[in-house]
Amino acid sequence: MEYILIIISAVFVNNILLSQFLGVCPFLGVSKKVSTALGMSAAVTFVMALATCVTYLLQYYVLVPLGVEYLQTVCFILVIAGLVQMVEIIIKKISPSLYQALGIFLPLITTNCAVLGVALMVVQKQFSFGGEAHMLNLGQSVVFAIASAIGFGLAIILFAGIREQLEISKVPKAFQGVPIALITAGIMAMAFMGFSGMV
Amino acid sequence: MSNRWKLITKGLVKDNPTFVLVLGMCPTLGTTTSAINGMGMGVATMCVLILSNIVISAVARFIPDKVRIPSYIVIISAFVTIVQLLMQAYLPSLYETLGLFIPLIVVNCIVLGRAEAFANKNGVIDSACDGLGIGLGFTLSLTVVGLVREILGSGSAFGWKFMAPDGMLLFVLAPGAFIVLGYLMVLFRKLTTK
Image 1 (cartoon, rainbow over the protein chains, first blue to last red):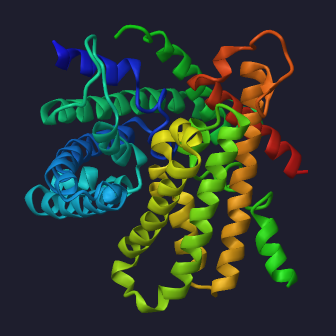
Image 2: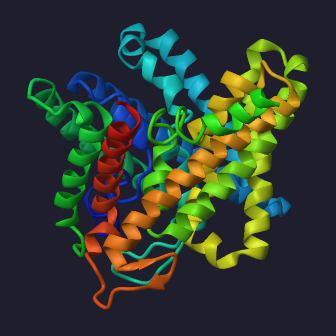
């Protein structure tokens, strides 16, 4: 039951993009076409799940026992950068077709703040899903990461669909490009506010 | 001297990181619930930017080209950790409100972008001026976005309440951030392009 609540909460209620503002750069950057948005969200899901799993273990089996929690930021970003590089090499070897599809998005993910944000969130914040507030365990953390990534994907794919329509409509000159995209995102965020209070 | 002065002032309008270069959107949207919060975030980012620009411009010639990005990230995250610990000790309430966005300065594209585009090719003092200029531009735009959201959303400015009703809560919540930033960007474009 708790897993379902985690998923609903991370995908809809506390959508990582539209209510927490993590990962806005790729949201504005690669949302011009639905197909690229799809590729980006698949790559983010993969890396986010893996990164959260590794950084969770790093936090509780290395940093906490050694008493060096203040090195969190440095260690996490290095792990994520290394992981992205490794995933890139492995995918290139195992499945060239998948590499073709995800390849160009992988290097961009290192500086996607959603990945580092989720990794930090699960070891810093307490969550309450119906019951008492508590730190997430490993399984819950990974589910939370995957659900957050799906929320990211949902928002970016919907947004890409809207932007494809915007391309062919008449927009005043000063609004063209980023400003109209931001205002559209604002209206989308308003729609997502309808989910608040559900969990 | 005039050259350095130009480096400092170009970040305010011509190369404004938020309104012109459209970098660092996450903290711009996430931390500007009030003018003070926006300004705090801007100053924290500016400190990291100046310090990392100085160190990177000083050591850039010793770093092999292939590992330069990871090395820059380590340097930047070291300064972010220092700023984080200092804020935790001396400004605990601001640290509490900015929360996750302080460690996330590491992945702010502005900081890495300036390291890659300016600091690794220029001298220490020039790089410090560049960091100061871009940092000031970022602080200014965050303060403006925060101020507009605070006035519309809670009827106050820099914590000083001048309106009896509470204003439109929407502007303090997530959708308001996107909409205010979008319209401010339009206004900025209108004012700068004649």
